[in-house]
Image (cartoon, rainbow, N blue to C red; front, top):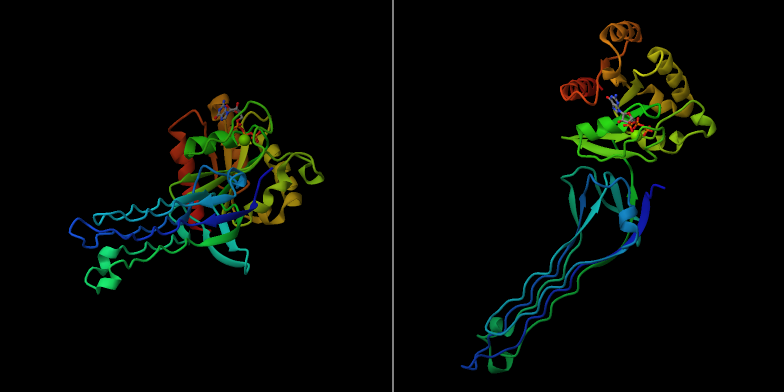
Length: 318
Ligand SMILES: Nc1nc2c(ncn2[C@@H]2O[C@H](COP(=O)(O)OP(=O)(O)OP(=O)(O)O)[C@@H](O)[C@H]2O)c(=O)[nH]1
Ligand SMILES: [Mg+2]
């Protein structure tokens, strides 16, 4: 099950206290407390949902250290970084207000500020005698209750029958590690991979009858809403790839009209399995569909840049 909404509690570190201390010369030398750690949220490509965070729920950053004698200042509390998948929207439960969203790997939001460090009596050394013991305590770190909501967002979504090689291509093009298997329905949930600035989404295979509840497809097509391009995979293992393609299009129309209408490129996968004469014949047939087509093999490293080129070319005009 994809976990796309969780509640968490965060607490930034408290600021350390400033201390009172005197040197042998009886002059104040108490150092300052340090700032507590912040709670920061950042994007990660290694997560496809929020399940990893589900069991932690309570996130705490380190407190700032108290000051010491001899003007020694405390050490800053370490920040706590929460990694979330892209796109995650963060709400404050108190007022239901959105605090921000992590849409790219470069996004970073400080959700809770660590408390300020207090001042040691060293700072008050020039005061009157009675102020020589003066110091201040650190302030508390912020505490918030949040809702994290996942909104998977990809530029390109991979669709096609099970076993067509979708996950294999995602892994070859990106840093993703989507499970690959020589059997249908290896992929059970959407997986994301990042290719420079592009986010690619590998979906479970779609089959005829998906719309009637067969297979897994419909549960996840809601995450394809914002995609700009569909990569439609058809394995060249199929007896007649054109027929296979067309029946999947019919099915897609029933499954999700929005996905059906998106701009699409056709990826003829596993080109290593057929000879070039047969491939040429299929290409002539499939080009009549009037969509960009590329035949490739995951095992031919020179093919991967060609697929990428097709993706980029077709994204420009969207
Ligand atoms: N010969 C050949 N086999 C491939 C190629 N790409 C992938 N495969 C194999 O095809 C099988 C299916 O690959 P996957 O990447 O898991 O296919 P998928 O479309 O993600 O499948 P589902 O997750 O079930 O929808 C695996 O055994 C892969 O090793 C290819 O270019 N050539
Ligand atoms: Mg797969």
